[in-house]
Length: 472
Image (cartoon, rainbow, N blue to C red):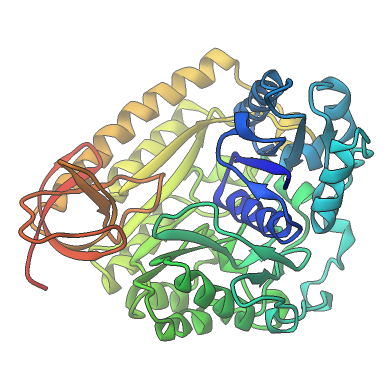
Protein backbone atom coordinates (compact mmCIF):
# COMPACT_ATOMS: atom_id res chain seq x y z
CA UNK A 1 0.00 0.00 0.00
CA UNK A 2 1.41 3.40 -0.98
CA UNK A 3 2.03 6.15 1.56
CA UNK A 4 -0.51 8.95 1.34
CA UNK A 5 0.75 12.54 1.55
CA UNK A 6 -1.14 15.80 1.77
CA UNK A 7 0.72 18.94 0.68
CA UNK A 8 -0.56 22.18 2.20
CA UNK A 9 0.79 25.33 0.55
CA UNK A 10 0.89 28.77 2.15
CA UNK A 11 2.28 32.05 0.86
CA UNK A 12 3.10 33.18 -2.64
CA UNK A 13 2.99 31.68 -6.13
CA UNK A 14 6.66 30.75 -5.86
CA UNK A 15 5.74 28.46 -2.97
CA UNK A 16 3.01 26.91 -5.12
CA UNK A 17 5.61 25.97 -7.72
CA UNK A 18 7.86 24.55 -4.98
CA UNK A 19 4.97 22.39 -3.78
CA UNK A 20 4.38 21.03 -7.28
CA UNK A 21 8.10 20.24 -7.53
CA UNK A 22 7.91 18.37 -4.21
CA UNK A 23 4.76 16.62 -5.41
CA UNK A 24 6.57 15.49 -8.55
CA UNK A 25 9.39 13.93 -6.54
CA UNK A 26 7.02 12.24 -4.08
CA UNK A 27 4.82 10.92 -6.88
CA UNK A 28 7.85 9.56 -8.74
CA UNK A 29 8.87 7.74 -5.54
CA UNK A 30 5.50 6.01 -5.28
CA UNK A 31 3.73 8.23 -2.75
CA UNK A 32 0.00 8.86 -3.21
CA UNK A 33 -1.00 12.53 -3.09
CA UNK A 34 -4.30 13.29 -1.34
CA UNK A 35 -6.15 16.57 -0.86
CA UNK A 36 -7.49 16.11 2.67
CA UNK A 37 -4.93 16.13 5.46
CA UNK A 38 -7.20 13.88 7.53
CA UNK A 39 -6.84 11.15 4.87
CA UNK A 40 -3.04 11.33 4.76
CA UNK A 41 -0.31 9.33 6.45
CA UNK A 42 1.87 12.45 6.38
CA UNK A 43 1.10 16.14 6.06
CA UNK A 44 3.75 18.39 4.52
CA UNK A 45 3.14 22.10 5.18
CA UNK A 46 4.97 24.44 2.80
CA UNK A 47 5.26 27.44 5.08
CA UNK A 48 5.64 31.17 4.47
CA UNK A 49 8.09 33.27 6.47
CA UNK A 50 7.66 36.68 4.86
CA UNK A 51 5.93 38.75 7.57
CA UNK A 52 4.64 38.16 11.08
CA UNK A 53 1.07 37.40 10.00
CA UNK A 54 2.30 34.80 7.50
CA UNK A 55 4.50 33.16 10.14
CA UNK A 56 1.54 32.91 12.51
CA UNK A 57 -0.63 31.41 9.78
CA UNK A 58 2.08 28.82 9.06
CA UNK A 59 2.39 27.83 12.71
CA UNK A 60 -1.38 27.65 13.12
CA UNK A 61 -1.59 25.38 10.07
CA UNK A 62 1.11 23.08 11.44
CA UNK A 63 -0.67 22.88 14.79
CA UNK A 64 -4.01 22.15 13.11
CA UNK A 65 -2.40 19.32 11.15
CA UNK A 66 -0.80 17.96 14.34
CA UNK A 67 -4.24 17.92 15.99
CA UNK A 68 -5.33 15.39 13.34
CA UNK A 69 -2.64 12.89 14.27
CA UNK A 70 -3.92 9.58 15.58
CA UNK A 71 -4.81 6.02 14.67
CA UNK A 72 -6.99 7.07 11.75
CA UNK A 73 -5.21 10.34 10.94
CA UNK A 74 -1.75 11.47 9.88
CA UNK A 75 1.23 9.79 11.50
CA UNK A 76 3.59 12.68 10.81
CA UNK A 77 3.53 16.44 10.22
CA UNK A 78 6.50 18.01 8.43
CA UNK A 79 7.36 21.69 7.99
CA UNK A 80 9.12 22.82 4.81
CA UNK A 81 9.33 26.17 3.01
CA UNK A 82 10.52 29.60 3.96
CA UNK A 83 9.68 29.52 7.68
CA UNK A 84 11.44 26.17 8.04
CA UNK A 85 14.51 27.38 6.13
CA UNK A 86 14.63 30.73 7.91
CA UNK A 87 14.37 29.48 11.50
CA UNK A 88 15.40 25.81 11.30
CA UNK A 89 16.28 24.40 14.71
CA UNK A 90 14.63 27.30 16.51
CA UNK A 91 11.31 26.37 14.89
CA UNK A 92 11.82 22.67 15.63
CA UNK A 93 12.45 23.42 19.30
CA UNK A 94 9.52 25.81 19.64
CA UNK A 95 7.13 23.52 17.76
CA UNK A 96 7.58 19.92 18.95
CA UNK A 97 4.19 19.11 17.42
CA UNK A 98 5.97 19.02 14.05
CA UNK A 99 7.77 15.71 13.53
CA UNK A 100 10.40 17.28 11.29
CA UNK A 101 11.55 20.67 10.01
CA UNK A 102 13.21 20.39 6.59
CA UNK A 103 15.07 23.02 4.59
CA UNK A 104 15.54 23.73 0.89
CA UNK A 105 18.58 21.44 0.74
CA UNK A 106 16.30 18.53 1.69
CA UNK A 107 14.05 19.01 -1.34
CA UNK A 108 16.04 16.79 -3.77
CA UNK A 109 15.72 13.90 -1.27
CA UNK A 110 12.23 14.72 0.04
CA UNK A 111 10.95 11.16 -0.53
CA UNK A 112 13.73 9.58 1.54
CA UNK A 113 13.40 12.25 4.22
CA UNK A 114 9.67 11.60 4.52
CA UNK A 115 10.14 7.83 4.67
CA UNK A 116 12.63 8.32 7.51
CA UNK A 117 10.21 10.54 9.44
CA UNK A 118 7.45 7.95 9.09
CA UNK A 119 9.85 5.33 10.47
CA UNK A 120 10.26 7.50 13.55
CA UNK A 121 13.54 9.20 12.66
CA UNK A 122 13.97 12.89 13.36
CA UNK A 123 16.23 14.49 10.71
CA UNK A 124 18.26 17.46 11.87
CA UNK A 125 16.60 20.80 11.19
CA UNK A 126 18.46 23.19 8.87
CA UNK A 127 20.85 25.67 10.43
CA UNK A 128 19.84 29.20 9.37
CA UNK A 129 22.43 30.87 7.13
CA UNK A 130 22.64 33.63 4.58
CA UNK A 131 22.01 31.73 1.36
CA UNK A 132 23.25 34.66 -0.71
CA UNK A 133 26.75 33.58 0.23
CA UNK A 134 26.33 30.20 -1.49
CA UNK A 135 26.87 31.87 -4.89
CA UNK A 136 29.38 34.46 -6.14
CA UNK A 137 28.34 38.04 -5.49
CA UNK A 138 28.86 38.96 -9.15
CA UNK A 139 25.94 37.62 -11.23
CA UNK A 140 28.22 36.98 -14.20
CA UNK A 141 30.20 34.45 -12.15
CA UNK A 142 27.17 32.27 -11.39
CA UNK A 143 27.12 28.94 -13.20
CA UNK A 144 24.13 28.37 -15.52
CA UNK A 145 22.06 25.30 -14.71
CA UNK A 146 21.90 22.45 -17.21
CA UNK A 147 18.87 22.26 -19.51
CA UNK A 148 15.67 20.45 -18.68
CA UNK A 149 16.12 18.28 -21.78
CA UNK A 150 19.12 16.63 -20.11
CA UNK A 151 17.15 15.47 -17.09
CA UNK A 152 13.65 14.52 -18.23
CA UNK A 153 12.94 10.96 -17.15
CA UNK A 154 9.36 10.54 -18.32
CA UNK A 155 7.12 12.08 -21.02
CA UNK A 156 4.42 13.18 -18.56
CA UNK A 157 6.59 15.15 -16.18
CA UNK A 158 8.87 18.11 -16.54
CA UNK A 159 12.12 18.90 -14.81
CA UNK A 160 12.43 22.27 -13.13
CA UNK A 161 15.64 24.27 -13.13
CA UNK A 162 14.89 26.47 -10.12
CA UNK A 163 17.14 25.12 -7.41
CA UNK A 164 17.65 21.33 -7.54
CA UNK A 165 16.43 19.69 -10.76
CA UNK A 166 13.19 17.94 -9.86
CA UNK A 167 10.00 16.72 -11.46
CA UNK A 168 6.77 18.67 -11.27
CA UNK A 169 3.22 17.45 -10.77
CA UNK A 170 0.26 19.78 -10.97
CA UNK A 171 -1.75 20.02 -7.77
CA UNK A 172 -4.43 22.26 -9.28
CA UNK A 173 -6.63 21.49 -12.27
CA UNK A 174 -7.43 25.13 -13.02
CA UNK A 175 -6.47 26.85 -16.29
CA UNK A 176 -3.76 28.99 -14.69
CA UNK A 177 -0.32 27.99 -13.42
CA UNK A 178 2.79 29.77 -12.21
CA UNK A 179 6.19 29.23 -13.80
CA UNK A 180 9.46 30.35 -12.23
CA UNK A 181 11.73 32.67 -14.17
CA UNK A 182 14.38 32.67 -11.47
CA UNK A 183 15.08 32.11 -7.80
CA UNK A 184 16.50 34.47 -5.20
CA UNK A 185 17.06 38.21 -5.12
CA UNK A 186 20.05 40.56 -5.23
CA UNK A 187 18.23 43.65 -3.99
CA UNK A 188 18.71 44.92 -0.46
CA UNK A 189 15.37 46.44 0.50
CA UNK A 190 15.73 47.33 4.16
CA UNK A 191 12.40 45.76 5.19
CA UNK A 192 12.81 42.40 3.43
CA UNK A 193 14.53 39.23 4.68
CA UNK A 194 13.73 37.09 1.62
CA UNK A 195 17.19 37.30 -0.04
CA UNK A 196 18.87 35.94 3.10
CA UNK A 197 16.91 32.66 3.05
CA UNK A 198 16.01 32.41 -0.65
CA UNK A 199 19.54 33.21 -1.82
CA UNK A 200 21.08 35.25 -4.62
CA UNK A 201 19.29 35.81 -7.92
CA UNK A 202 19.69 32.94 -10.42
CA UNK A 203 17.91 33.07 -13.79
CA UNK A 204 16.67 29.94 -15.50
CA UNK A 205 17.81 29.39 -19.10
CA UNK A 206 15.18 30.47 -21.61
CA UNK A 207 15.00 27.01 -23.22
CA UNK A 208 14.13 25.47 -19.83
CA UNK A 209 11.35 27.98 -19.28
CA UNK A 210 9.82 27.44 -22.72
CA UNK A 211 10.01 23.66 -22.40
CA UNK A 212 8.26 23.72 -19.04
CA UNK A 213 5.66 26.11 -20.47
CA UNK A 214 4.94 23.62 -23.28
CA UNK A 215 4.50 20.86 -20.70
CA UNK A 216 2.11 22.98 -18.63
CA UNK A 217 0.08 23.83 -21.74
CA UNK A 218 -0.16 20.11 -22.49
CA UNK A 219 -1.65 19.68 -19.00
CA UNK A 220 -4.49 22.11 -19.78
CA UNK A 221 -2.91 25.36 -18.61
CA UNK A 222 -4.18 28.31 -20.63
CA UNK A 223 -2.54 31.16 -18.71
CA UNK A 224 0.99 31.20 -17.35
CA UNK A 225 2.09 33.57 -14.60
CA UNK A 226 5.84 34.16 -14.71
CA UNK A 227 7.09 34.54 -11.14
CA UNK A 228 10.33 35.32 -9.36
CA UNK A 229 11.48 37.58 -6.55
CA UNK A 230 12.27 40.27 -9.14
CA UNK A 231 11.36 39.57 -12.76
CA UNK A 232 13.02 42.75 -14.05
CA UNK A 233 16.40 41.23 -13.09
CA UNK A 234 15.87 38.21 -15.34
CA UNK A 235 18.94 37.55 -17.47
CA UNK A 236 21.49 39.69 -15.68
CA UNK A 237 23.40 36.57 -14.58
CA UNK A 238 23.07 35.15 -18.10
CA UNK A 239 24.86 38.17 -19.51
CA UNK A 240 21.79 39.85 -21.02
CA UNK A 241 19.71 42.48 -19.21
CA UNK A 242 17.20 42.36 -22.08
CA UNK A 243 16.70 38.60 -21.81
CA UNK A 244 13.08 38.95 -20.69
CA UNK A 245 12.23 41.05 -23.73
CA UNK A 246 13.75 38.31 -25.89
CA UNK A 247 11.95 35.54 -24.00
CA UNK A 248 8.39 36.85 -24.15
CA UNK A 249 7.81 36.43 -27.92
CA UNK A 250 8.85 32.77 -27.69
CA UNK A 251 5.64 31.86 -25.84
CA UNK A 252 3.62 32.56 -29.01
CA UNK A 253 4.66 29.21 -30.46
CA UNK A 254 3.10 27.18 -27.63
CA UNK A 255 -0.13 25.51 -28.72
CA UNK A 256 -3.10 25.94 -26.40
CA UNK A 257 -1.62 28.81 -24.41
CA UNK A 258 -3.90 31.87 -24.40
CA UNK A 259 -1.74 34.34 -22.51
CA UNK A 260 1.33 34.87 -20.36
CA UNK A 261 1.40 37.25 -17.41
CA UNK A 262 4.59 38.76 -15.95
CA UNK A 263 4.62 39.44 -12.21
CA UNK A 264 6.93 41.08 -9.66
CA UNK A 265 8.36 44.04 -11.57
CA UNK A 266 10.61 46.59 -9.84
CA UNK A 267 9.61 50.10 -11.04
CA UNK A 268 13.20 51.42 -10.96
CA UNK A 269 14.32 48.55 -13.21
CA UNK A 270 11.38 48.52 -15.62
CA UNK A 271 13.09 49.46 -18.88
CA UNK A 272 11.31 51.10 -21.84
CA UNK A 273 12.00 48.00 -23.93
CA UNK A 274 10.36 45.77 -21.32
CA UNK A 275 7.34 48.08 -21.14
CA UNK A 276 6.96 47.79 -24.92
CA UNK A 277 7.32 44.01 -24.87
CA UNK A 278 4.61 43.54 -22.23
CA UNK A 279 2.38 46.11 -23.91
CA UNK A 280 2.80 45.02 -27.52
CA UNK A 281 3.88 41.36 -27.86
CA UNK A 282 0.86 39.19 -28.85
CA UNK A 283 -0.15 36.71 -26.15
CA UNK A 284 1.43 38.69 -23.31
CA UNK A 285 -1.05 40.19 -20.85
CA UNK A 286 -1.11 43.99 -20.83
CA UNK A 287 -0.59 43.77 -17.10
CA UNK A 288 2.05 45.47 -14.96
CA UNK A 289 2.59 44.15 -11.44
CA UNK A 290 4.73 47.02 -10.16
CA UNK A 291 6.16 46.94 -6.65
CA UNK A 292 5.88 50.64 -5.74
CA UNK A 293 5.69 50.13 -1.91
CA UNK A 294 5.55 53.92 -1.36
CA UNK A 295 6.01 57.16 -3.30
CA UNK A 296 7.52 59.58 -0.76
CA UNK A 297 11.24 59.88 -1.67
CA UNK A 298 12.44 59.99 1.94
CA UNK A 299 10.57 56.79 2.81
CA UNK A 300 11.79 55.07 -0.35
CA UNK A 301 15.39 55.94 0.49
CA UNK A 302 15.00 54.46 3.96
CA UNK A 303 13.54 51.38 2.30
CA UNK A 304 16.67 51.32 0.07
CA UNK A 305 14.51 51.74 -2.98
CA UNK A 306 14.31 54.39 -5.68
CA UNK A 307 11.59 56.58 -7.13
CA UNK A 308 9.06 59.28 -6.39
CA UNK A 309 5.49 60.21 -7.18
CA UNK A 310 6.59 61.96 -10.37
CA UNK A 311 8.85 59.16 -11.64
CA UNK A 312 6.18 56.55 -10.94
CA UNK A 313 3.50 58.58 -12.71
CA UNK A 314 5.87 59.02 -15.66
CA UNK A 315 6.29 55.23 -15.83
CA UNK A 316 2.53 54.74 -15.79
CA UNK A 317 2.14 57.33 -18.56
CA UNK A 318 4.74 55.46 -20.61
CA UNK A 319 2.81 52.21 -20.13
CA UNK A 320 -0.50 53.76 -21.13
CA UNK A 321 1.03 55.36 -24.21
CA UNK A 322 1.63 51.86 -25.56
CA UNK A 323 -1.38 50.15 -23.96
CA UNK A 324 -4.09 52.60 -22.83
CA UNK A 325 -6.19 49.90 -21.13
CA UNK A 326 -3.29 48.06 -19.48
CA UNK A 327 -3.90 46.71 -15.99
CA UNK A 328 -1.64 47.85 -13.18
CA UNK A 329 -1.46 46.46 -9.66
CA UNK A 330 0.83 47.25 -6.75
CA UNK A 331 1.40 46.93 -3.02
CA UNK A 332 2.12 49.68 -0.53
CA UNK A 333 3.60 49.62 2.96
CA UNK A 334 2.44 52.18 5.52
CA UNK A 335 3.82 52.80 8.99
CA UNK A 336 7.45 52.48 7.89
CA UNK A 337 9.95 53.87 10.44
CA UNK A 338 10.25 57.63 10.09
CA UNK A 339 7.16 57.96 7.88
CA UNK A 340 5.55 61.37 8.48
CA UNK A 341 2.11 62.80 7.82
CA UNK A 342 3.63 64.64 4.86
CA UNK A 343 4.86 61.29 3.51
CA UNK A 344 1.38 59.83 3.86
CA UNK A 345 -0.10 62.82 2.03
CA UNK A 346 2.44 62.27 -0.76
CA UNK A 347 1.48 58.61 -1.01
CA UNK A 348 -2.18 59.56 -1.13
CA UNK A 349 -1.44 62.04 -3.92
CA UNK A 350 0.27 59.33 -5.94
CA UNK A 351 -2.46 56.73 -5.47
CA UNK A 352 -5.18 59.23 -6.32
CA UNK A 353 -3.44 60.06 -9.61
CA UNK A 354 -2.17 56.60 -10.58
CA UNK A 355 -5.47 54.90 -11.55
CA UNK A 356 -4.30 51.46 -10.41
CA UNK A 357 -6.59 48.47 -10.86
CA UNK A 358 -5.54 46.65 -7.69
CA UNK A 359 -3.66 47.82 -4.61
CA UNK A 360 -2.60 45.77 -1.60
CA UNK A 361 -2.12 47.68 1.67
CA UNK A 362 0.28 46.32 4.29
CA UNK A 363 1.36 47.65 7.64
CA UNK A 364 5.10 47.70 8.31
CA UNK A 365 6.34 44.59 10.11
CA UNK A 366 9.85 44.69 11.69
CA UNK A 367 11.37 41.45 10.38
CA UNK A 368 14.22 39.65 12.13
CA UNK A 369 17.62 40.48 10.70
CA UNK A 370 16.48 43.38 8.54
CA UNK A 371 17.86 46.89 8.63
CA UNK A 372 14.39 48.41 8.93
CA UNK A 373 13.84 46.65 12.26
CA UNK A 374 16.71 48.71 13.70
CA UNK A 375 15.80 52.12 12.25
CA UNK A 376 14.75 54.97 14.47
CA UNK A 377 11.26 56.42 14.21
CA UNK A 378 9.43 53.12 14.78
CA UNK A 379 5.65 53.55 14.98
CA UNK A 380 3.38 51.84 17.49
CA UNK A 381 1.18 48.95 16.40
CA UNK A 382 -1.89 51.13 16.92
CA UNK A 383 -0.48 53.89 14.73
CA UNK A 384 0.37 51.42 11.97
CA UNK A 385 -3.10 49.85 12.17
CA UNK A 386 -4.68 53.29 11.89
CA UNK A 387 -2.66 54.03 8.75
CA UNK A 388 -3.58 50.66 7.24
CA UNK A 389 -7.27 51.39 7.81
CA UNK A 390 -6.95 54.87 6.30
CA UNK A 391 -5.32 53.60 3.12
CA UNK A 392 -7.40 50.44 2.84
CA UNK A 393 -10.50 52.64 2.78
CA UNK A 394 -8.88 54.93 0.21
CA UNK A 395 -7.83 52.15 -2.18
CA UNK A 396 -11.26 50.53 -1.99
CA UNK A 397 -12.69 53.76 -3.41
CA UNK A 398 -9.92 54.15 -5.98
CA UNK A 399 -10.19 50.58 -7.23
CA UNK A 400 -13.96 50.92 -7.57
CA UNK A 401 -13.48 54.11 -9.57
CA UNK A 402 -10.95 52.42 -11.85
CA UNK A 403 -13.31 49.51 -12.46
CA UNK A 404 -16.10 51.95 -13.36
CA UNK A 405 -13.78 53.51 -15.94
CA UNK A 406 -13.70 50.16 -17.73
CA UNK A 407 -17.44 50.11 -18.42
CA UNK A 408 -17.80 50.04 -22.21
CA UNK A 409 -14.42 48.34 -22.81
CA UNK A 410 -14.12 45.11 -24.74
CA UNK A 411 -12.11 42.57 -22.77
CA UNK A 412 -10.87 38.99 -23.13
CA UNK A 413 -12.05 36.82 -20.21
CA UNK A 414 -10.39 33.52 -19.29
CA UNK A 415 -13.19 31.38 -17.83
CA UNK A 416 -12.22 29.91 -14.44
CA UNK A 417 -15.48 28.60 -13.02
CA UNK A 418 -18.82 27.55 -14.46
CA UNK A 419 -21.72 27.08 -12.07
CA UNK A 420 -25.40 26.44 -12.45
CA UNK A 421 -26.15 30.17 -12.35
CA UNK A 422 -22.79 31.87 -12.75
CA UNK A 423 -19.73 32.00 -14.98
CA UNK A 424 -16.65 33.79 -13.69
CA UNK A 425 -13.21 34.49 -15.01
CA UNK A 426 -10.52 37.10 -15.30
CA UNK A 427 -9.82 39.76 -17.88
CA UNK A 428 -6.34 40.55 -19.15
CA UNK A 429 -5.87 43.25 -16.47
CA UNK A 430 -6.89 40.95 -13.59
CA UNK A 431 -4.22 38.75 -12.02
CA UNK A 432 -5.18 35.46 -10.33
CA UNK A 433 -6.35 35.53 -6.71
CA UNK A 434 -5.05 39.00 -5.84
CA UNK A 435 -7.13 41.14 -8.24
CA UNK A 436 -10.79 41.40 -9.15
CA UNK A 437 -12.84 38.94 -11.21
CA UNK A 438 -15.26 39.27 -14.14
CA UNK A 439 -18.75 37.78 -14.04
CA UNK A 440 -20.15 36.85 -17.46
CA UNK A 441 -23.89 37.37 -17.94
CA UNK A 442 -26.40 36.92 -20.77
CA UNK A 443 -24.50 33.98 -22.22
CA UNK A 444 -25.88 32.82 -25.58
CA UNK A 445 -23.59 29.82 -25.94
CA UNK A 446 -22.11 27.19 -23.67
CA UNK A 447 -18.67 27.94 -22.26
CA UNK A 448 -16.28 25.79 -20.28
CA UNK A 449 -13.36 26.38 -17.93
CA UNK A 450 -10.30 27.44 -19.92
CA UNK A 451 -12.24 29.17 -22.72
CA UNK A 452 -11.27 32.71 -23.72
CA UNK A 453 -14.40 34.83 -24.17
CA UNK A 454 -14.55 38.27 -25.79
CA UNK A 455 -16.92 40.38 -23.71
CA UNK A 456 -18.25 43.91 -23.28
CA UNK A 457 -18.05 45.41 -19.79
CA UNK A 458 -21.56 46.39 -18.63
CA UNK A 459 -20.94 47.30 -15.02
CA UNK A 460 -18.79 46.93 -11.93
CA UNK A 461 -19.03 45.98 -8.28
CA UNK A 462 -16.02 47.20 -6.35
CA UNK A 463 -12.98 45.97 -8.31
CA UNK A 464 -15.04 43.28 -10.06
CA UNK A 465 -16.59 43.62 -13.52
CA UNK A 466 -19.81 42.44 -15.09
CA UNK A 467 -19.59 41.68 -18.81
CA UNK A 468 -21.52 40.04 -21.62
CA UNK A 469 -20.03 38.02 -24.48
CA UNK A 470 -19.79 39.68 -27.90
CA UNK A 471 -18.80 38.36 -31.30
CA UNK A 472 -15.00 38.32 -31.56
